[in-house]
Length: 220
Ligand code: DX5
Ligand code: ZN
Image 1 (tube, rainbow, N blue to C red):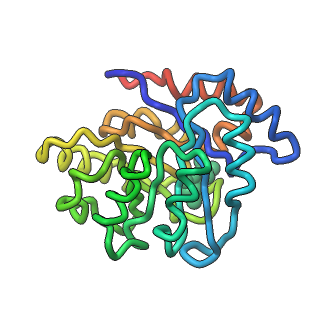
Image 2: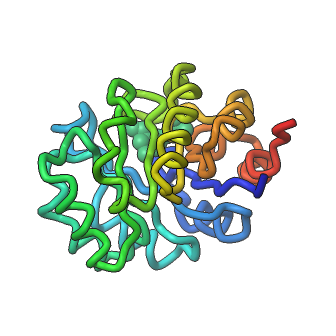
């Protein structure tokens, strides 16, 4: 099994020392910086948007993985692409015309991702798999960092892996919410290949080491 990609979530960073936090990410074995956008409408919280994206784009050398927890992502896709997003993830639950939205993300030169809330079954993606570069399985109800991991997610990752294999899709499987050393190995064995980690990285005594440990967690 190849090493998983690690995507530390900026939401858990210390904003008083963003330059230091970004230096740490740049030095680390992180593969992406996960950037959570919340609109107070799709989720019961508001996080940050374009001004901080500009800062992250300027300071961070890792590709930006933008997770849009917003009701009308189509309106802003071009701005996020222009602002430096390498990956744009929209929520299945917020996209009545998901096929068009995903095609648009690719046209903008970004990887197209679909996030699924904990209650949304993976089978609903079957007819758009060809448009998807990454599926973001939410392992908490989106809106806040620091929540407890929902154990059912492990089975859901395995179901998604089966669905992708059965349909010849090489989409990545990314997991977001409450990810730590306590569940990383189970997630990877189930088929995940990218792990988002907020609190378990940024609240660790040594965040750079926490990233390394997640990346090299033993799955045997
Ligand atoms: C939750 C966000 C997550 C969050 C993860 O709505 O989408 O990306 O930052 O943080 P932790 O790892 O602390 O659950
Ligand atoms: Zn996220």
